[in-house]
Structure formats: C-alpha cells, structure tokens
Image (cartoon, rainbow, N blue to C red; front, side, top):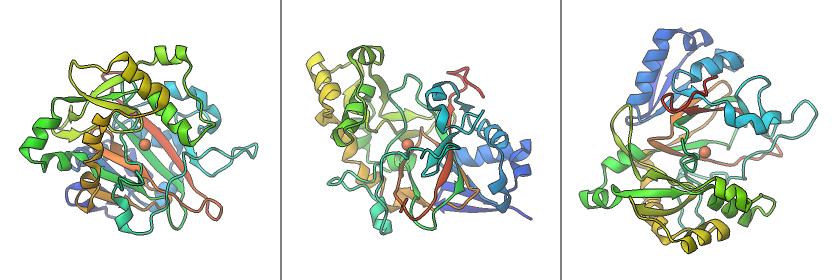
Length: 328
Ligand SMILES: [Fe+2]
C-alpha cells in the first residue's frame, strides 16, 4: 500500500499514513521521517494498521532514530515498564498481579476545540515542556498507542517555534535575554499542594537537586530555529542571565511552591501560543506512534472516562546523543 502524508496544521506536524512495521525498520524511511520531523516543527505521527503489532524492540529502534532512548532514570519505575525495555506503560491498565498502574495527574476532558487554548483562570490545559529541571532535559518523547478510548485522552501539541517567530520585535527582545529557573523542589511542592500524598524533597534531596536554568528562547541545535522554551510546573522564575533569586526568594519557590511573578512573562503568552494557529489536537488510534521534539513544542494531556474506557500508552524519553551515554 502506498504511503501518504497529511499535514496537521500548516507546517506544524506531519502524519504518515499506511505505515508498516517494516517501514519503521527501513533506514531510508527512517532518514526521510527524521527530515520530515525536523522540517515540521518536531511533530511526527506514523499510522498504519500493522503498527498495533509493533514490538518493544522495534519501537526502541524507531525511537533511536530521533534521539538516544533513555534507560537509566527509569529504574525506579520498574513495575510500570514493559518488561526488559526502557518503555513506560501509562494508562488505566493493570500489571500481571492485577495492580493498577498509576495514571498521571488527572487531566480535564476537552468539550470543544476552544478548550485546547490555555485558560489563565483555570491554568488548564497544563501545557508544558518536559523536565527542564534536569541538568540534561529530554529532547523529546515517543508515544505509542496500544489501546485508545473512543473519546477523550487526546494529546495537545503547540508549535513554540512559529509562535516565537510571529512575535513582534519588542517582545522578542524582552524574552531573548531571559532564562527559566527550573526547580524540582518547586515542582514537587507545587504538586503536593493539590495532591497531598505527593512527597516533597527532603532538605538533603533539595540540596542535591539545585535548580537548572534553561533559555526562554532556545536555539534548536539541528534546525537553528528559535523557539519559546522552559515552561512547566518546575519553572519558578524568569531571570536575565547572570541574575539569581535571593536565598529567601528561592525558599518561597521551593518550600511554599509559589512562583515568582516573573513567570507570568511566559504564562501570559500561553493563550497566544496555544491558540488555533499553533496547535494540534491529536486523537489517538491504536498503533499510532508520535514523536515530538521538546525543544520546539509544548504539549498537554487531556482526560477521558477511565471508568468506562481502557487506555494504554507506551512512552519513551529521548536524550541528546551528545550529552548522554544512555542509549538503549
Ligand atoms: Fe509532558
């Protein structure tokens, strides 16, 4: 069957159709797919009936086309992994012992396309870049759908490269010198405020995990394009390079989970960045494999009726090959 291509929103996002497991293992197909991924803002979907049968080995090999598959940091989640592979299982599925695998924090189910756009009052959907508090933040992720509910559980993506490119000069000049201060302690404290069982860092853990700083305008190392970057629940301040929060201000961020007001510079852009011009609402079918680039997109989960429907997703995390030896 011949392949076809569908663009998802202008030059953001590309979907390849009628794809088989053999295609994913073909080096020519892999290099074309990589090019398409890079030239469509870092969002690529492959779809095909055959892909429901994709093996963990084949998924890892496919993921390695786009980055180095992370394996080291996943040890603590062994019970939620596909046995023997660096693949995290997500959804309302159960393991062999009947224990339910934890879903991530409950997300709101969309009622209409309007709900894709960030609402400053509810702070939903929870649009973010993954794990910028880490010294080497992941460059991307791969999601493979094993079982999808007939409705809900879409994943949302926004093109932070085009959103940045379309800003006026004054806004770009304001953003360009800034760095996002991203703190794991702040992230965990913030989550514990609405999920009281969520553990916060001990003083020792906090000392061992100092905040990481990332540019608010990131230059993509492959494409060279600039994109808005560094906003998630760990982001506690936006500061010019070389400037720091005082110890007291950092304590407020980390121990009380309160963001510095400077984060509003980014947050106030979110309704714009997540408007219809820059977003894709991805509706999953079993077999779909999506690869996204964290360096030029942001994303959000959405909810579904987990009492009625089953969902199982396989997730891999991609690291920069130049920064890590963690290749599966
Ligand atoms: Fe995420």
